[in-house]
Length: 319
Picture 1 (cartoon, helix red, strand yellow):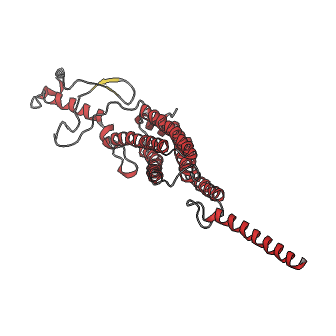
Picture 2 (cartoon, one colour):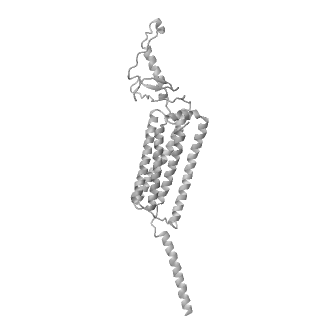
Picture 3 (cartoon, one colour):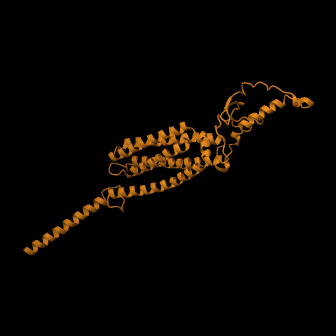
């Protein structure tokens, strides 16, 4: 009897052990549809994903950190270049974009919070607002880029600011041609005759700022119009920088387009991430039990915002 009882107790203990192990295994691998097969628990999966995201963000910091170092060294050696170039950057647009991204960081943080609480509709709302903020940011960059391309402020060898910088020379050329047209060069004394310049018409009048910062009068040319060839594009800038143009002026815009362009690509990637997250939410693949994608997407978006916070003063607020 004692042997039979011992055997029954042993078999019961073994069954209990197997049952407990089986429950734990099923809880880790079979009960949650969000758990990948190579993780033991959702917590482990979350921590692994977050560590991977932080490692990726570290590489992003190294990338932009190298560009910031290049900016610092070049600015220290050529301060006149940045003093001249920043006059072409609109601080109002830059400040607006800064506020847009800061607000988008708030909405992204709210999306993460709502994902932790499992509120599907609110997650979608905040993700959509964040996406729209990204669209607003890129829209403003489009306006800024279009103006610079129109004025010939391209990066590298494509730089053709001579069409804008030569506006003052073009004005003087027009005045000289106007004076010479009033002089009869067939007369010997023609060179000694002083001719009063003809009065400027209302179309030709218009205030401007010379490179030295003094107010001057120059012809007012509409966009797309040239005094010699109506079909040739001629740009009449609204203002010229109050400092002399440096020889390596194109380098500033190479740096500007490199930094802001690379950041803009990251914004576009972030907008794509927002769309992907919205699809996951609508398919009920994100909730209070599993919000890792939203959390990691928020980390990436916050880095994009942080980089712009450095770019704005470095490029737009040069002293």
